[in-house]
Amino acid sequence: MTAKTVLIVDDEASIREMIAVALEMADYRVLEADNAQDAHALVVDHQPDLLLLDWMMPGTSGIELARRLKREEATAELPIIMLTAKGEEDNKIQGLESGADDYITKPFSPRELVARLKAVLRRATPRGVEDPIEINGLLLDPVSHRVSAHGKALEMGPTEYRLLQFFMTHQERAYTRSQLLDQVWGGNVYVEERTVDVHIRRLRKALGEVHQNLIQTVRGTGYRFSARV
Image (cartoon, rainbow, N blue to C red; front, side, top):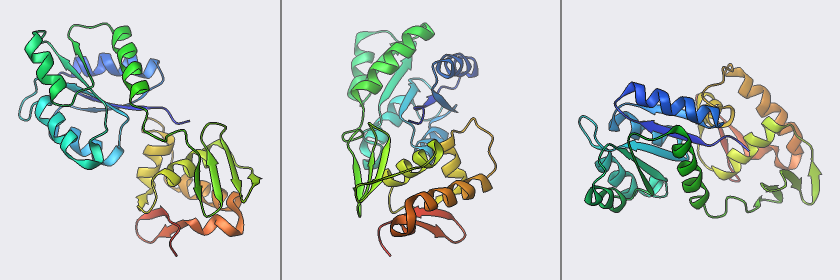
């Protein structure tokens, strides 16, 4: 399975760096923003699994961003942990009422942060994330990491599997090669964009004649997974 992605939003670079090091050592992918506007754009473009959000930031506060994300349908389920120097009870309540899933007060140890983050991610595992996905006889089982077509097992490499899983859980949307690199390979890995084309060809070959057309080339953009002709 692909590593979980965490977006760190804090206007203090030293705090972002400390958190990023701790998360990368725990095998998380890390995205960073120093203000709410950039953070919102990253959430939309990269769909992180969790948001670590500073309460007090210049401009739009963390509380305001949390409320906005919880109002929008596409981001309403995004788990949020608030980071703040405020320890008063009413501030904690305000943070949780804004939609935050947990609250951690600075200063905190990296170990405590990672433990809290893991707990929130466990609780927030999206409904159906471990359920098999079936489209036109093509079946992907996330638990066993097996793919079959009309009951016949298909052989494919780990990258092709991750690519297929991403496509099957994000249907009917065109993705650029750059977006696919971020989502499937991870933002910290240097891979040329044409590598995506190589793995798309391998995936189509593995899917065979019946299902290879599910992965459609979108001219001028990239690729889309669609059962529509």
